[in-house]
Length: 310
Image (cartoon, rainbow, N blue to C red; front, side, top):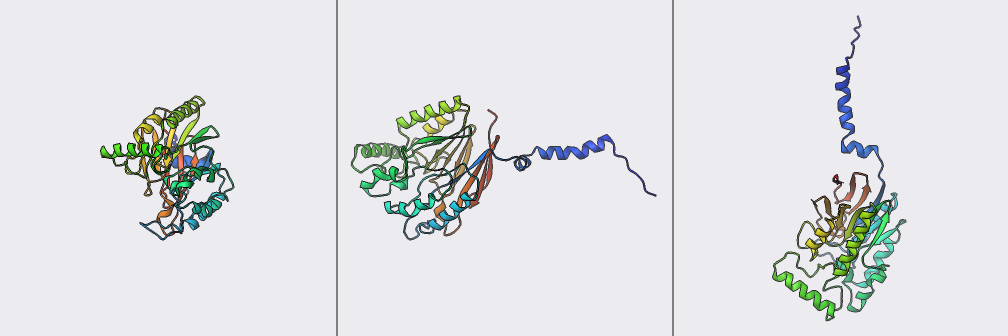
């Protein structure tokens, strides 16, 4: 004899409840929605026609960079940005690496790194023109977002010709930091100038008033503090954390990568592409209403960076 079991309302509720809870998990949310848009990001290609040194494989960077560009072109990306140090040294290195970047089929942007200025004294003043930059720091707007590109080399000893007034001023500033025993008091770091800080303050004011969320890009990190952060890292960090519309600060320069969240801002440092013989490192970042979804390639880890309820 076949027995027919009846299901009570309580049993039905207990069956459905786990499904409802699961549908609210971040992972299921990710699968059930599409991003508002996505962009590609990479850092520290550091190509030159040089022998490997200190676990950096300069010639190998070209093949990895080409692989990265092919992958970006196979995705629907709003733009791509490289976070600096696209060359290791020598102005002629631009002739090998920039044509690869130009193969991208979407808008593409540059952040200035310290190695861009590892060229002859007479060529330093032409670096921005070679990269097609009208300004060393600038901003772009995409679908209700403001992307702010900073120049961490604004005040530095390597950007300007030796013996110039700007060089002497930067050298004095570095010596003061060294006397204070600060870990970031290194000649390969720099600082944002007062004019750039004023521009940043004005830009963030405009973005917040317009209801835009903001992501900042700079070659040099500001957090976690280490030997590679900006000379005026605390000043920059305090400024950006005073604006609720800022959600992230993304950098390169510190090749092992890094991450910290502080006062609602995600500080993400991407891994350097140059650091292995053949394993790559770059990312696609998806923009969702509640988070940044980092899709890492190669050594770059994937992660979700959720926005605070501000």
